Image (cartoon, rainbow, N blue to C red):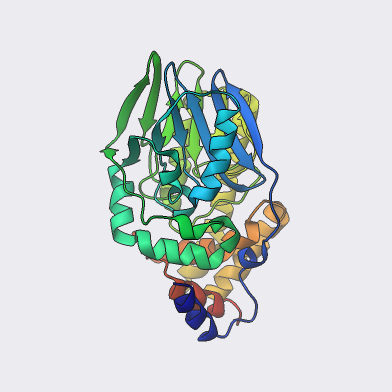
Length: 329
């Protein structure tokens, strides 16, 4: 794969690299208790994981990009409990969320049926694409055994009992992807949202559904949550803070889509859509984690959706480079 990637990169003139390719600094890990026996593993805008400790075993939410990175989550878990890890729940199919799953050795790996379908449709392409874009997130990539497949899938809602602790895994609507799931722990009224909600971090919308995202956020808001473990960024504790994170995420999604849609409506170019989006979003969000990393992919997807392409096109390593070149003009 590395030789294939080198060929792709050399074969395309790039005025500058993706912002994520130059992001090489290690991030500080935090392991924050967001409820009794509930933890958010966060790393300054890198992909988060969640931990739910039941009576006899542990559920992990999100598996990181490689087994080596997953081991950092396991180390944090072992600092608070020696109970075995019985379940890994994956909120969607993206490589940086799922390819480390083998490290947990969990008997159950759970995804929505829609997310599993996306692994089948585009999992390998997504892996190749994300590896090219953001190499730091794939430390130890040689240890990835292959695509991650669930042992269990569901549609709509699934409940897992960790002893007496009830965990609801829910599809509340499309947003970050078509297969998004959230994990709700009723006894603490805490939700692990995956990348539907971010905290002071840009949303990645490259496989998103802009028209649905706001409604999905409102479905989360209806739970009147006491805390959220978001997809990226710090844990969000307290109802006021939760509502603020939901508001800011909705503003980010709307501020990305609306200026792009106006350009698309008059048959403007992708580059014009990029300029319009930057004019709207830079003043509000330029200090958000991974903002520059996400922006080109967000604009490209918004431009497609505004032109009636409702099923997100598959990102490949080659398509990434072609899109990036178009934005340099």
